[in-house]
Image (cartoon, rainbow, N blue to C red; front, side, top):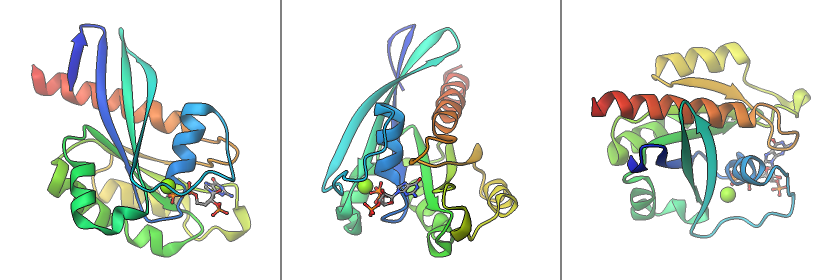
Length: 180
Ligand code: G3D
Ligand code: MG
Protein backbone atom coordinates (compact mmCIF):
# COMPACT_ATOMS: atom_id res chain seq x y z
CA UNK A 1 0.00 0.00 0.00
CA UNK A 2 1.42 3.38 -0.99
CA UNK A 3 0.65 6.21 1.39
CA UNK A 4 1.04 9.46 -0.52
CA UNK A 5 -0.17 11.45 2.46
CA UNK A 6 -1.94 10.34 5.58
CA UNK A 7 -5.24 10.86 3.76
CA UNK A 8 -4.61 9.13 0.47
CA UNK A 9 -4.10 5.44 -0.04
CA UNK A 10 -3.27 3.72 -3.31
CA UNK A 11 -4.35 0.14 -3.79
CA UNK A 12 -3.67 -2.10 -6.75
CA UNK A 13 -6.86 -4.08 -7.28
CA UNK A 14 -6.94 -6.92 -9.77
CA UNK A 15 -10.01 -8.45 -11.34
CA UNK A 16 -9.69 -12.09 -12.34
CA UNK A 17 -11.93 -14.92 -13.54
CA UNK A 18 -12.69 -16.79 -16.74
CA UNK A 19 -13.17 -14.98 -20.05
CA UNK A 20 -16.69 -13.64 -20.62
CA UNK A 21 -17.81 -13.52 -16.98
CA UNK A 22 -18.05 -9.72 -17.09
CA UNK A 23 -14.78 -8.42 -15.58
CA UNK A 24 -14.41 -5.54 -18.00
CA UNK A 25 -18.12 -4.71 -17.81
CA UNK A 26 -17.99 -4.55 -13.99
CA UNK A 27 -15.04 -2.15 -14.05
CA UNK A 28 -16.68 0.01 -16.70
CA UNK A 29 -19.91 0.01 -14.67
CA UNK A 30 -18.17 0.95 -11.43
CA UNK A 31 -15.88 3.59 -12.87
CA UNK A 32 -18.05 5.11 -15.61
CA UNK A 33 -21.52 4.18 -14.31
CA UNK A 34 -22.52 2.65 -17.60
CA UNK A 35 -22.92 -0.68 -19.35
CA UNK A 36 -21.51 -0.74 -22.84
CA UNK A 37 -22.43 -3.82 -24.84
CA UNK A 38 -19.89 -2.80 -27.47
CA UNK A 39 -16.94 -2.66 -25.11
CA UNK A 40 -14.03 -4.33 -26.91
CA UNK A 41 -12.39 -7.39 -25.37
CA UNK A 42 -9.23 -6.34 -23.55
CA UNK A 43 -5.93 -7.20 -25.19
CA UNK A 44 -3.25 -6.36 -22.62
CA UNK A 45 -3.88 -4.62 -19.31
CA UNK A 46 -6.19 -1.68 -18.86
CA UNK A 47 -5.85 0.33 -15.69
CA UNK A 48 -8.53 2.69 -14.47
CA UNK A 49 -8.59 4.82 -11.37
CA UNK A 50 -11.49 5.03 -8.97
CA UNK A 51 -11.63 7.05 -5.78
CA UNK A 52 -13.41 5.26 -2.97
CA UNK A 53 -14.10 7.06 0.31
CA UNK A 54 -12.95 5.08 3.31
CA UNK A 55 -12.92 6.02 6.97
CA UNK A 56 -11.11 9.37 7.41
CA UNK A 57 -9.40 9.05 4.05
CA UNK A 58 -9.70 8.41 0.35
CA UNK A 59 -8.54 5.26 -1.33
CA UNK A 60 -7.45 5.45 -4.92
CA UNK A 61 -8.26 2.11 -6.41
CA UNK A 62 -6.07 1.27 -9.40
CA UNK A 63 -8.27 -1.25 -11.11
CA UNK A 64 -6.36 -3.66 -13.34
CA UNK A 65 -8.28 -5.41 -16.07
CA UNK A 66 -6.72 -8.32 -17.91
CA UNK A 67 -7.73 -9.44 -21.38
CA UNK A 68 -7.54 -12.46 -23.62
CA UNK A 69 -3.78 -12.71 -23.19
CA UNK A 70 -4.46 -14.15 -19.74
CA UNK A 71 -3.89 -17.52 -21.39
CA UNK A 72 -0.17 -16.78 -21.08
CA UNK A 73 1.12 -17.61 -17.62
CA UNK A 74 3.85 -14.95 -17.49
CA UNK A 75 1.27 -12.29 -18.35
CA UNK A 76 -0.93 -13.39 -15.47
CA UNK A 77 2.08 -13.41 -13.18
CA UNK A 78 3.07 -9.80 -13.86
CA UNK A 79 -0.59 -8.83 -13.70
CA UNK A 80 -1.08 -10.32 -10.23
CA UNK A 81 2.27 -9.38 -8.71
CA UNK A 82 2.14 -6.61 -6.13
CA UNK A 83 -1.62 -6.43 -5.96
CA UNK A 84 -3.29 -5.47 -2.70
CA UNK A 85 -6.75 -6.88 -3.23
CA UNK A 86 -8.67 -8.91 -5.74
CA UNK A 87 -12.11 -9.51 -7.19
CA UNK A 88 -12.59 -13.09 -8.38
CA UNK A 89 -15.52 -13.05 -10.77
CA UNK A 90 -17.68 -15.88 -12.09
CA UNK A 91 -20.86 -15.97 -14.16
CA UNK A 92 -23.95 -17.08 -12.21
CA UNK A 93 -25.32 -18.65 -15.40
CA UNK A 94 -22.19 -20.70 -16.16
CA UNK A 95 -21.26 -23.45 -13.69
CA UNK A 96 -17.85 -23.99 -15.20
CA UNK A 97 -16.75 -20.45 -14.37
CA UNK A 98 -17.85 -21.11 -10.77
CA UNK A 99 -15.85 -24.33 -10.64
CA UNK A 100 -12.73 -22.44 -11.75
CA UNK A 101 -12.79 -20.06 -8.76
CA UNK A 102 -10.29 -22.13 -6.78
CA UNK A 103 -7.86 -22.25 -9.70
CA UNK A 104 -7.86 -18.48 -9.86
CA UNK A 105 -7.39 -18.27 -6.10
CA UNK A 106 -4.40 -20.61 -6.25
CA UNK A 107 -2.76 -18.36 -8.84
CA UNK A 108 -3.56 -15.26 -6.84
CA UNK A 109 -1.96 -16.68 -3.70
CA UNK A 110 1.07 -17.83 -5.65
CA UNK A 111 1.85 -14.45 -7.21
CA UNK A 112 0.26 -11.92 -4.83
CA UNK A 113 0.32 -13.73 -1.49
CA UNK A 114 -2.44 -13.79 1.07
CA UNK A 115 -4.36 -10.63 0.17
CA UNK A 116 -8.04 -9.79 0.78
CA UNK A 117 -10.36 -10.96 -1.97
CA UNK A 118 -14.07 -10.96 -2.73
CA UNK A 119 -16.08 -13.40 -4.81
CA UNK A 120 -18.45 -11.86 -7.35
CA UNK A 121 -21.24 -13.83 -9.02
CA UNK A 122 -22.10 -11.63 -12.00
CA UNK A 123 -25.06 -11.49 -14.44
CA UNK A 124 -27.77 -11.82 -11.79
CA UNK A 125 -30.15 -10.04 -14.20
CA UNK A 126 -30.33 -13.30 -16.21
CA UNK A 127 -32.65 -14.88 -13.66
CA UNK A 128 -33.96 -17.74 -15.85
CA UNK A 129 -30.47 -18.91 -16.77
CA UNK A 130 -29.07 -18.86 -13.27
CA UNK A 131 -27.20 -22.04 -12.24
CA UNK A 132 -25.60 -21.13 -8.90
CA UNK A 133 -27.69 -20.24 -5.85
CA UNK A 134 -26.86 -17.52 -3.37
CA UNK A 135 -26.43 -20.15 -0.63
CA UNK A 136 -23.99 -22.16 -2.72
CA UNK A 137 -21.93 -19.06 -3.46
CA UNK A 138 -21.91 -17.97 0.19
CA UNK A 139 -20.83 -21.40 1.37
CA UNK A 140 -17.95 -21.50 -1.11
CA UNK A 141 -16.83 -17.95 -0.26
CA UNK A 142 -16.59 -18.92 3.40
CA UNK A 143 -14.75 -22.15 2.64
CA UNK A 144 -12.03 -20.46 0.60
CA UNK A 145 -11.56 -17.50 2.95
CA UNK A 146 -13.09 -14.65 0.94
CA UNK A 147 -13.79 -11.35 2.73
CA UNK A 148 -17.33 -11.60 1.40
CA UNK A 149 -19.30 -12.46 -1.72
CA UNK A 150 -21.71 -10.42 -3.81
CA UNK A 151 -24.05 -11.08 -6.65
CA UNK A 152 -23.99 -8.34 -9.23
CA UNK A 153 -25.16 -7.25 -12.62
CA UNK A 154 -22.88 -5.07 -14.68
CA UNK A 155 -25.91 -4.59 -16.90
CA UNK A 156 -28.28 -3.09 -14.31
CA UNK A 157 -25.61 -2.00 -11.82
CA UNK A 158 -27.10 -4.16 -9.09
CA UNK A 159 -24.59 -4.84 -6.28
CA UNK A 160 -21.58 -3.46 -8.16
CA UNK A 161 -20.67 -0.42 -6.07
CA UNK A 162 -21.36 -2.35 -2.85
CA UNK A 163 -18.82 -4.99 -3.82
CA UNK A 164 -16.10 -2.45 -4.68
CA UNK A 165 -16.72 -0.40 -1.53
CA UNK A 166 -16.65 -3.48 0.68
CA UNK A 167 -13.35 -4.80 -0.64
CA UNK A 168 -11.69 -1.39 -0.58
CA UNK A 169 -12.64 -0.83 3.06
CA UNK A 170 -11.64 -4.35 4.07
CA UNK A 171 -8.27 -3.95 2.33
CA UNK A 172 -7.48 -0.61 3.95
CA UNK A 173 -8.24 -2.19 7.33
CA UNK A 174 -6.11 -5.21 6.49
CA UNK A 175 -3.04 -3.18 5.51
CA UNK A 176 -3.49 -0.75 8.39
CA UNK A 177 -3.37 -3.66 10.82
CA UNK A 178 -0.33 -5.14 9.04
CA UNK A 179 1.55 -1.85 9.41
CA UNK A 180 0.78 -1.51 13.09
P1 G3D B 1 -14.71 -10.34 -19.46
O1 G3D B 1 -14.05 -9.01 -19.37
O2 G3D B 1 -14.74 -11.07 -18.16
O3 G3D B 1 -14.17 -11.21 -20.54
P2 G3D B 1 -16.94 -8.84 -20.52
O4 G3D B 1 -16.27 -10.11 -19.83
O5 G3D B 1 -17.07 -7.71 -19.59
O6 G3D B 1 -16.26 -8.58 -21.81
O7 G3D B 1 -18.42 -9.40 -20.78
C1 G3D B 1 -18.64 -10.58 -21.57
C2 G3D B 1 -20.07 -10.56 -22.10
O8 G3D B 1 -21.00 -10.63 -21.02
C3 G3D B 1 -20.43 -9.30 -22.86
O9 G3D B 1 -21.41 -9.65 -23.83
C4 G3D B 1 -21.12 -8.43 -21.83
O10 G3D B 1 -21.98 -7.49 -22.38
C5 G3D B 1 -21.87 -9.49 -21.04
N1 G3D B 1 -22.13 -9.10 -19.65
C6 G3D B 1 -21.25 -8.66 -18.74
N2 G3D B 1 -21.83 -8.44 -17.56
C7 G3D B 1 -23.15 -8.75 -17.71
C8 G3D B 1 -24.28 -8.73 -16.84
O11 G3D B 1 -24.22 -8.39 -15.65
N3 G3D B 1 -25.47 -9.14 -17.37
C9 G3D B 1 -25.58 -9.55 -18.67
N4 G3D B 1 -26.81 -9.91 -19.08
N5 G3D B 1 -24.55 -9.57 -19.51
C10 G3D B 1 -23.34 -9.18 -19.04
P3 G3D B 1 -21.08 -9.85 -25.39
O12 G3D B 1 -22.40 -10.17 -25.98
O13 G3D B 1 -20.50 -8.55 -25.84
O14 G3D B 1 -20.11 -10.98 -25.43
MG1 MG C 1 -12.38 -8.19 -20.41
